Figure 1 (cartoon, rainbow, N blue to C red):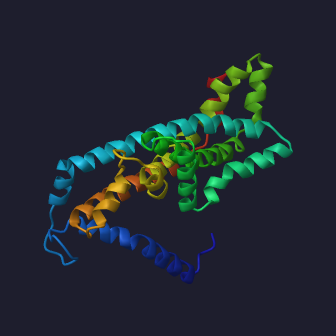
Figure 2 (tube, rainbow, N blue to C red):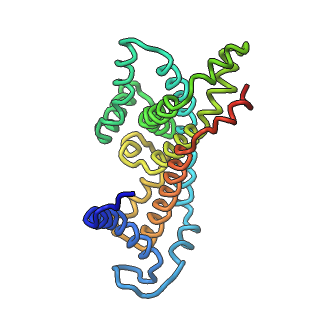
Figure 3 (cartoon, helix red, strand yellow):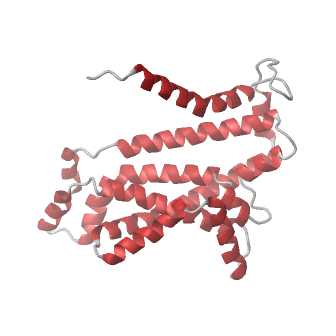
Length: 266
């Protein structure tokens, strides 16, 4: 195996340091006993204890988790069906549908939030949990479709063809062949969508209404009066949860269905 140049390793380490050093500092300061500043005054868990007893933060956490679960679940239901339909259909129309579905991923998020707000205002829709869920589905749906389609292109069509030759209906092929083989991608897309929804601020800021404060909105309201150790602790929790979800999503998407397992679906 050819050895990587030392310069490449050095550049990679510098990039990793640039990306993750602020996160490490943030997590470290969340255990600082000092009430302000970055001067180290000792190790403590008191800021996490205050978070656990803060009713407003707990309510915002519950709101964020519920919104993330609902928006991700709906995006998965629609996304899996859309991805399978796009992979089984061909023609000029598919290219246009692909472009339209991918637009939310390339449109600036602030523009997406303003556009959604204008649509809700014009349609006289009351801003609240429903509008946040719709807003999160807008960027979760194309993300789900991209991940599922990438998995679909790796599947061996011989499994589905063999099932049809043995007399399986289209529904049987979908439920006993396609969906089980897509399970790692579905879990991966769900975890990634859940993370993106849980951490979203810009779109949520525009489409949220009274009484629908999410965790990112709560963090924003807290830092407007200055950075406090509680903000550091809350941010550290969000960062760790997000990194775990993204890492698990990546791991699930890398899993490949073993050839021998196909017989259990027939």
